[in-house]
Image (cartoon, rainbow over all chains, first blue to last red; front, side):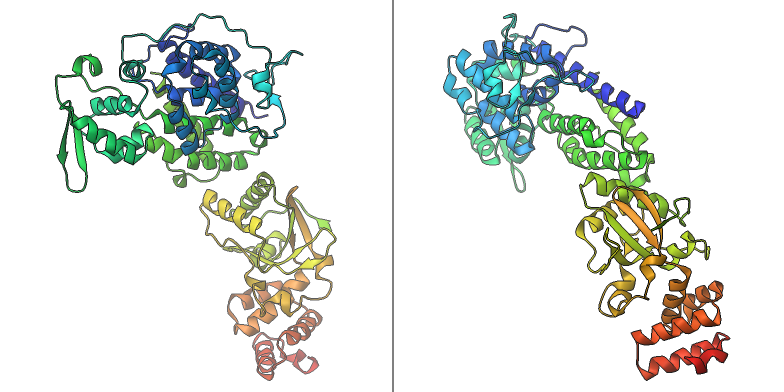
Length: 341
Length: 204
């Protein structure tokens, strides 16, 4: 197998695991310390990516389970389902399995039941892999919740070290708002309003994963509080926060809330990872490999644009044949470095 | 099947066909055996070295060496060729069935007897083999095209192939089967005369 492609693959996995550990640690998962997360964390998008990438770090995967036992009440299961469907995240089986598990642990089993997927015949496969891509050996005794979803792993033994999410700081802002206002769209909407001078419902819908109608109706209701102000533009209504009222909560440092549209960004990373570990993409000649990287780039580009994050893959049409491999590797390296800064 | 894998194609076509094989493999497509004529085949077989803008498929062949109509081209092949065009900055029709695209094309009107046995093959991988037509068949096709189009670059190619009288006579007889009209016969006689082969006209 091409050594440079293996190194590229390993680099992607390391950077994505760094990102996931950092975000989960900021929400109360005990683990790595190091660079601090400073942006608002979207727990649903984070869980969706973690269920794919976390298969390559069993410790992270089980720490997340542990965290969900403590904090799962503040996850928005409907939003999780919507994001999974809208962006076509590939973690449905893993989510169904953890839902089976949380149904037994949670005070609100019905909530998690909504995520349990209908049983479909599926060839069982190992849940966990080594970073090299080899499956982790599976013991004779298996976790029934996962086996039922076609994923094989040993029994779940949680350490019980997960903490409630912190009541301070920007990363847990969304979860703190949910604790205050309930698990509903208003929490994301407040974050979005705090992130911009003013915005309109279609942009908020795109940035939060809620339907335009839900956003429009909710913003209209919130405007009646006096905390949210509205003005009519040419074709849309524009909304903003009345300054001073919620600033201490939403903008503790005085600057706009650092909101990233994580869902499309994380889906782009999921496409990238699933793309580079696809068995059919190993051992390709350089020309065909470059062609496949173009294909991955085409899938990722609109998602990176939707993330509104300012980093993008270069236009592949400017590079002929094998030239594009170098460009793609450089672009991905830059994006992952930027993300981890 | 006579393999000749060290032959070099003009321009980017070796690279394009190599990538085409890779794309077909990734797409899980069947294996295709392409029978190629025109400038690419002239270059590949070392008969003439000149620029060419496309790869002309005159027929497909199954693994039992039976020639097949290349119109329409199989969709997996078309799809893969479009990706190759995009990746290598080539025109979308770089791979085409132009010589055999319809009822008036070479395949449906009838290919020279024994063409399949004379092909020289290059294997690009498990999904793609390309058979280049022989000099004899080039002369057939070039004479027909030169008469049909009143000269042009086909006449130049034919000139460079330097056919013998017997080869040209065979080609003239085959060309007549494609167009039995008196107009074509008159055109054929005129062309041979202009081409310096007037002495074989009475033997057609």
